[in-house]
Amino acid sequence: MTTGVLAEVSPQHRWEWKPLWAVLQRSKETGSPELPPLSVFLDAGVVPRSSREDNHNQLGEDLSKYLVVRPGDIVFNKLRTWQGGLGASLHDGIVSPAYFVCRPNSATNSRFIHYLLKSKPYLAELVRISKWMPPSQFDTPWENLRKLPLLLPGLDEQRRIADFLDTETARVDRLASARERQIAVLEECEYAEVTDALIPDSLTSAAGEWPWTWLPAPDDDAPLVRLGYIARLQSGLTVDGKRDLSGDVVTRPYLRVANVQSDRIQVDNVSEITVPAHIAKRSTLLAGDVLMTEGGDLDKLGRGTVWRGELEECLHQNHVFAVRPDASRLDADYLSLMTRTVHGRCYFESTGVKTTNLASTNSSKILGFPIPLPSLEIQRLRVQTVQRKLDGCARAKQRLRAQLDLLAERRQALITAAVTGQLDVTTSRPAHDREL
Image (tube, rainbow, N blue to C red; front, top):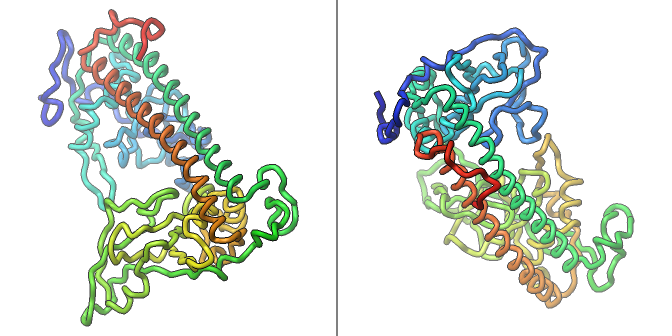
């Protein structure tokens, strides 16, 4: 009965293989627009839409067509099922008609099904039965999902396993949340260190003077200078299928928005573009350019990252701005760090165009960024001081992220072992009696 990855799963004594359709009945109930909208998240499962701020999908105009979800129903986001975008609902609510809502029969525990489908072999099988949808999605057809073989013990055993996993995963999740809070504190420390080193007193003695009310009193040794006076901005290329490529053309690496992170450049997945040589010349990056993206998360808008010539003769997308400092007056690393100060955040947040949690800027606003400009020597000294502190924070965050990876592995191993019968939950020691 089993194929693919699931063929390697050995059924335990009195455990049975059953197709999904035999234990979950698809529900197409609609007509309850008064119920609260629900969302399906990879980390949290099925939760009220109002409980999260990171769902930017718009609700449909006619909520009466949305599918009704009852407590105990299993909900599948069919475009995210392959990643684990599914879960057992604890709530009454409604979801998009593009989702699948399934109701377990009386011999099936929905929490067990939730964990079973989140286990390693089942996630691999869900990828296998899904269909590729370019550029980066998989769709899980109902006809494939309904035939998915489920390995099931009796109902009492399902409940015991689900209870065990509720307790164990909650403990792992608490530890992971603590590590994430520590990382957040370190990031705030970085923010404060950069601000205090580059603009002394700005955290404690803001002058309140218009228009930059968050800055301290002016310093004669570091006058405010508009970025456009000490740097120039280079625009990038658009992908144009109608562009004439009959003459002298070149094929070059092509840096896109996705490659430019707030603190680093990712070059492991850079695409290429073929353009006329004279156009390439106008959009070629040089070492020392500071890259900024046109849009992104509001709290990271305007963050600059220094290009250090990671790829030769690399071109950049039109949504990536390349700011080229006058090397005799402005240090590239100083500019990059300045965009990470309270001054940089306040300037770009106040001048950006905001939509929900996203925002955008433009070339005029970037060139209008006022920078405290001490001598080049002082700029470099401040950069060195800050960088030493940032390196220490980075090492601490790296260790914390390694712990998060281990916790995620532990969580997945527990789920997989329990739902496939490799771990006898009746003899397993309770969480408070042992350490991870």
